[in-house]
Image (cartoon, rainbow, N blue to C red):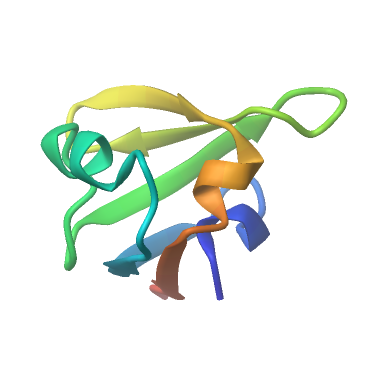
Length: 74
C-alpha cells in the first residue's frame, strides 16, 4: 500500500520511500521508515493530500505520495 492510497483518518507507518527526486527532501522532513503518519484530508479534487507527521502537518502531491510505501496501523 502507498501513502496515496490512505483514506482520511487512517494512521499509517512508513515502510520505505522509493527512488525519486524528492526522497532526500522527504526524509529530512521526517518521513523516515518506522515513522507513523496520519492522513488528515485531501483537497476537493484529490490533490494534494495533507498528512500529520511528528508535530506538524505536511501537504504532498499524490504523485509524490505514491512513492512512499506504508502499512496501516490499528
